[in-house]
Every structure is written in C-alpha cells, then in structure tokens.
Length: 84
Image (cartoon, rainbow, N blue to C red):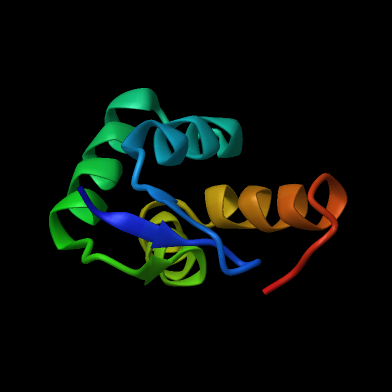
C-alpha cells in the first residue's frame, strides 16, 4: 500500500477517492476526476507528499480547464486557509 506524507509529517494510505472529491468541488466532471485519480495512483510511490500530488493535479486541471485550477486555489485559500 502506498503511503502519503501529509504536511504535518504524518503518513496515511493513498486514497484516490479524496482526489475525486476534491476535483469535483472544482467543477471537474466525475469521470475526468476519476481518470486523473487513477493516473496519479499509477505513478504514486511510497512517501509521495500531498504537495507533489497537488502540483500534479493542478497541472492537469490547468491543462484541461484553467477555471478548475482557479477554483481549487480559491478553495484552498478560503476554506483551508493555505496557499502553495
């Protein structure tokens, strides 16, 4: 099982559904969100960081629909109170 390193140093199992849910919140269709989650899961290695995952997702969102990337960033700033 692939473990993800969180911002605070904790590790937890990689759960693709978390990516799907986050992407749907940006406005991305669920089928696209699932495809991206599967792509990231295939390339994930033990110890991958949440920042690495986020960077990959934002790149894919921007390439497909820049508005989805902006929505993710706005959500991070407004709700999660973080940037970058």
